[in-house]
Image (cartoon, rainbow, N blue to C red; front, side, top):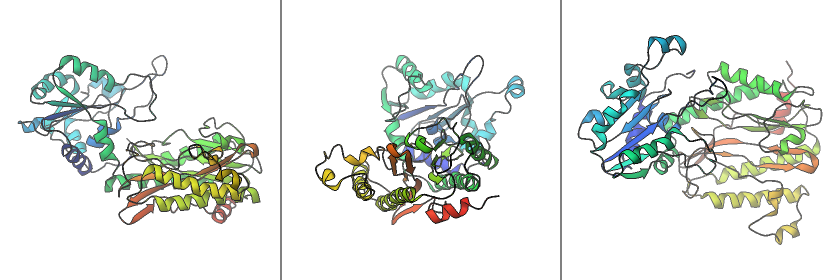
Length: 433
């Protein structure tokens, strides 16, 4: 991995926090993600299962973590299984974690670290002391994958082999824990944001008429990787002109033209934690009056929405209030009629013609991080704040997005140092190299 080592105190604390919410006599099993194929003998890059990483810090394939806090034998309370290396693996793939390195990374005693091929022999010494088996699934509202994961295969195999145990869902507990970021996690997120800012500032004098969207993508990737990031936190959206009205435009294959706005939804990851930034810039470095008016309207909504990201608020009410703020701005821009708004269907408000996505989502190990929308906002939660206005008939789309940490007394904009005001954007874009 490119990132610097993370203190194992974070993972020790995370396991302790999970143990506190488990039922008595429970065993927890977590598997690493599969390495997925592409074509022929090709494979995709490995990305660790976020829950396993959250609890162990191990960023290696074919890893299994088993937790059994109530086990009578201390060495079976936290058990880590690793892929055993060999001279052949060292030659072809490189170094794999030793048991000593796994202890240093995770804080799990070396005496409780085994090789993955030993799983059945060790697990059978644990499972019959348990009444409950917690298994993980990808319980995300946006998950639509039809690929059977290692987790799904494991559920079927466990239930066939141990049919009389009580099976429990781990996902709700992990969603509850991961929603509140620990101080070390905020630091890792902040590093992803710092790298993102470096890439963004690199771009400002680079963008000009005639630059291609993929050239912008290349500039960002260069800056991200040179600062210890694996690269983009998500597939970058670099959308100039009318493409900015396509919410998930990822082709990035057009030239940027004079007079257009370019919408950049781009950010870096660091140590598996993800930033999420959006800015909208004039290709020629100067906003037209119309572009500036729409931009200022979006910025106003963003500033007002940020004020609502405080402890005690609830997701649905927050979005309704942001919708009311957006309505007022759209009326001011001449896009909505005040009388029509007064007669609108409250379940299908008119502002959705121009602002059709949510304002915020959880952020962390996943870009759309896990969490429960019905849980009141609490200190330690991190949200995006990303209003937008998309006027398809004008070929104009503007979205702005920062990352917000909720605190006991309000919130902190973790991207506060990244340029966003019109005057600052224009000034920096005209500082040509």
